[in-house]
Image 1 (cartoon, rainbow, N blue to C red):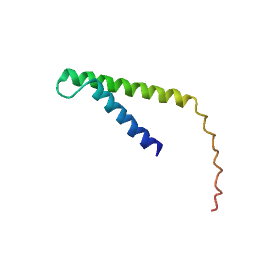
Image 2: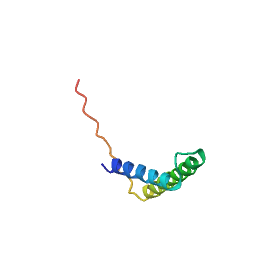
Image 3: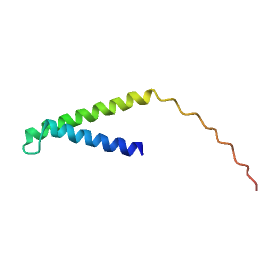
Length: 70
């Protein structure tokens, strides 16, 4: 659920960034809005990668061998 909510809020933030910095009426306005939205996406991705570095490591699970009855 967190992944879906994160994606939803991330897309909403990028749309808001696009609307605040550009528009779809001309190529120049579109480029400005697209650049702002992609900059925000890159910053959010970088922040997620940094946050992931501080997560605890997974415990290694050793699977027991199943007995083979022939």
